[in-house]
Image (cartoon, rainbow, N blue to C red):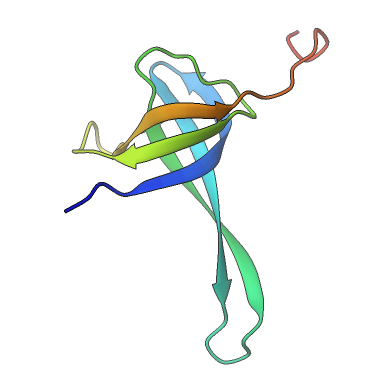
Length: 88
């Protein structure tokens, strides 16, 4: 069985070795057929603590690491644009 992977955006990195990644999916309503977006947040293991808020990342499924962590950071696909004003 292959590992599942997803691409999302880091929305929080306030925990140690953990980031929260928001993955946006599009779905079609079964009755009205309208396409809508649904965002899901995952707690992701970041061993090196290198992901920052706004980064686009790829995550992969792994064995349970804690009560709510079942994903780990595979790679940072795109760094967020940061300025000196944002770092304060």
